[in-house]
Length: 315
Image (cartoon, rainbow, N blue to C red; front, top):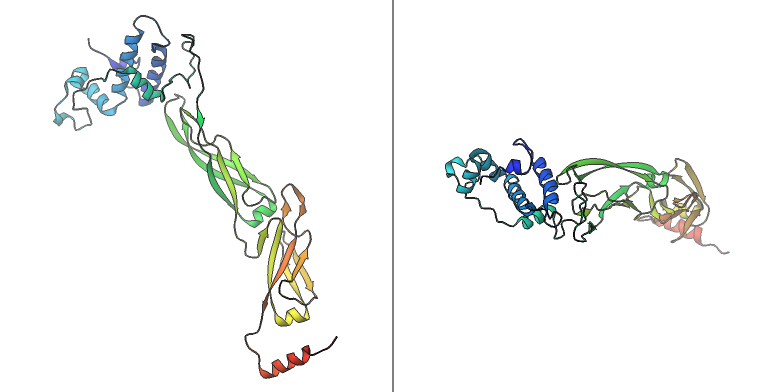
């Protein structure tokens, strides 16, 4: 008996690949022998699987559309196969369960599907959810020290795979994720967007996690909530005193007098001039000024004598 695969799947000959998948999904669930005990359901289920096996394959479908079932099963001469048609003799493998499982993915094809066509009330079988979530997708988020000092909003465009309405096919769509950067965030802060990864029929989308990475700054080095500023000074300045001008991250110019003799390891600490505390932005760490002492490369005999005279004193 001749088979009309399009009639079997209840679609017309202009059906798209998505239409073919949607029709097979609906009818295969309806006539599966485990949920439909009516006479003829098993035969109908096999016919559906064969129809899908042919129409879902572009080469088999091209042959069937042009030469019919006789050309599909008998094979066609190679010279007629230039348009991508199936040139070998087609024989369905005869295992509709195999086709069903390959389509839905997994040995328990009813685990992830709920349908309004026919309630699942046979043989005590109940729908179960066995989806597992994909591993988190981690990406670095590079922020400047100014961003972390003041706080800001970052917009990040991602492209991800989204399931279409038919539940079978998918497409790539863009989405904008917004991150509100809080003042004082530290390197390594993690921002999680739950289930924003690729969608799939048999998995839970992965979480997308952004990890804060701090860019280097030309003036400051950050240590926890403190900012470290290194000033270059001469030996004369170290011995006689000077002032250090520091341009702060909030736009102020600090003129810091140094009246002590600057020795190796000397630091000047300004309380409350560092980074905001992320949990309490009204509180701030310290600004620590360190010094890079530059010694003269050479001295004349006269200068050496003068320095010796200047340093030859008694308390």
